[in-house]
Structures are given as structure tokens and as C-alpha cells.
Image (cartoon, rainbow, N blue to C red):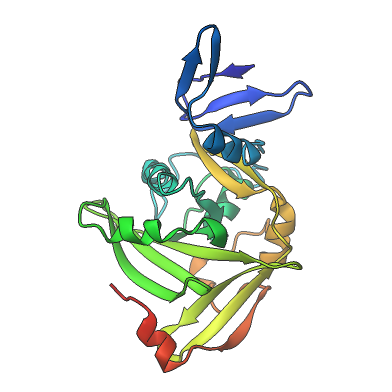
Length: 264
């Protein structure tokens, strides 16, 4: 059976074994006495992401705690989820600081200054870039690093919203043995690689009433990235290319590679 709570932006399903699932609302078609999802393929894709996990809430802070990114910003994150999902049903997976904040604090880390997501490389359609570059887009695309097949990253901001928050969208690649994503130090052409256990299963969580997508192996991912993920470390001490425990140099892009990158 399923529920349509009025205080969240998703529907909740309960399997026969008691497993909770969450999905964004979808259109329902009817044929005589039967009802079914209007877009079956999208429904089945979303169902495979839908098992719902709860945050650990290791660090509890009042909602009125002063934060660099206000809690009201989660609405903009949810809108970005919806925007990306309209492009071939791509799923925006919560990552890095937003992922840690969700699990550790059920919220946004109070001192974090930007937000990170990844999209599985097989879902990172060229339509996403085209939509973000469209003048009518509610987002300003200000950085394109890497190539679709290597260390791809798009950076956007929500237009006409204060404070401005950088939102990075990374491509996550998966081989037979591992998953990884890349970053680029532009002026040195140096590439960096973050390695993870092979990601094969994705779930959902609740971020202040909004549905988010997450890797199902939450604590394994956090331990690989940070070690002791329960400890709160100031964001201004974090250096993107060396603070994570799973990051290492990964060669350099050539000048020809840099010329191929569309910097907008």
C-alpha cells in the first residue's frame, strides 16, 4: 500500500515485508478498473532507487542554528532534483558534505559553503548540459571541467537567489571493480580521482521533507571518504584535492583536452 503525506514532497510505499520505499509523485493512468503508472519504464527505474533509509542524527542541532546555507535552501535543491530528472530520468545523488550532513545531522552542516552531487555516468545525458546552458534555465552554469568520459563536472548556481551557493554536479563512473569520480585543478591540468566501493544500489532519504537519492551503503561510503565521519570538522580546514582519504592524483589533461572543454 502507499501513503501521500501532505508534509513531504514524496509518496511512501510499504512492501509486504515491511520495507519502506519513497518515490516522487508520478502520473497514474487508468484502464477500466485498473490503475497503473503512466510511464512504466520511469516507474521501474525509480522503484530500483526507492528503498528508504533514515539518517543517524549523531549530531543534533536546533533548526534555528545559524548556518552558512539556510535550511530554506533545501527547496532549491529539490527543484534541481526535479529539473535534472526531466532529462531522461537522471537521478541526482547526494554526495560529499550534503550527504554527510544528511546522515550525521539529518540536516545541512552549519558551516558548509557549497553542495555536491553526482550523477551516474550512464545517466549523465548531454541533455543535462544543454538544459543548463539554456537562457531560460533557472540555473547559471559557470564551470565545465573534464570530459564526459573522464572527470566530468558541471558547476551551477541558482539564479536570482541569495546567498549564492555553488552546486557541483560530478559524473560517477563504475568499472568492474570500483566506482570513481574525478576533479581538475585547472591551472596545473592535474586530475584527481576519488575511489569508492563499486556502487550498484541506490536508495532514498528525507532531507527536511524533501526526497533525496543516496548510495545505500551509507556508512561504508562515509568511512572511505572521511574515516571518522561522526566528528565535525570545520569546512575551512577542508582542502578538496587532499583532505579526503580516498583521493589521489590521476595524471594530467593535455592542452588539447582543455581546449575541448566547453567553459561556457
